[in-house]
Length: 435
Image (cartoon, rainbow, N blue to C red):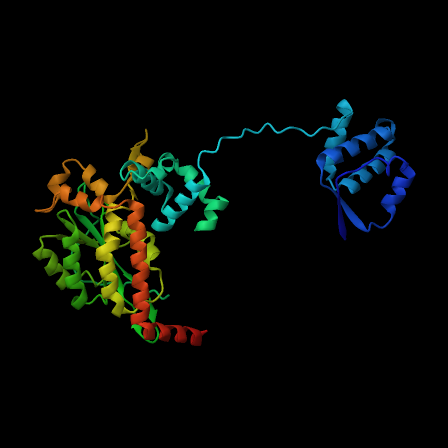
């Protein structure tokens, strides 16, 4: 059916139509639908039609005919026609109602939204509070004037801008850990009492291949209090690879390590790791059965940090050395000096029930959290000072470092693709064959 839109309606072709002719028009087959585009002209036409036919003096049947005619010619709904007739009854006029909606001034410009999108792209879209912290640091600490307005943005408005049209134009196999019955390490949850040095650790497997076997492994180490995070990459989780990698990773923490906590996987609950920790005078603990929260913090980081950075697809174990180099030179520095984390505040109600909340002021980088601890200097390893750590933390802004890290990551995967092209092609061929 053809839809006819009309705007400049005159009374010359409607005044001569009486109700009988209008009824005949309505009962005839309709070759087209009418649709009013100009509201002012449509309201004027309805007003004149009602006045011409003396709508108030018509009987029920006649009003129904005129009502159907108005609905057919304008394309308005029944409810809208009723409202317009009611307006005409009250004053003999049908005038478009002016909107009294409050129009708030625009604070953030198109350039601000583009800058937010680029910042999010560099940091892989962090949570609202973490992003707000980065925007504030870019202006307050690193003196980047283009972040002046965004430095004061609220967390809720960050999500509003992320849904804007301008923002939108910019931006495998799993194996369960095998249980062990080796009696190494104490079965209990870490109790740091606000002190750094209580490390949680877990492994992340980077997929399997039907032709090439298992992929490489990531080892994730996280301090419970400061959320200081060190990630390393190894070809396998046997003692040949894990022992030297763990020893190096533990040395990368700037503060003294007190406790080493893991799940019950055999990669950590073994004599080799136990001897290493004893040599470093680090106490070893492991998760309790049926207590899923004992190592929940590191599991969260596995998904929110590692999987976000490396994905789930298979990567050949031969590429472990290249990825580990990128971790040491770029990724670990970004995580600890440039990526804000949320730190919970525990509140207790009148009934004694405790609840953890995340305030906007509780978002900071792990390095800022370490410095904020009471008498923080006493936790540092011998020879390490905050002055030396400041040289690492403030040499670049958060977003500049994130962009530099991202470019290094792109070069890394290009190099992996070129070096291990045959391995990757075998995976693609095998995948297509299985389909």
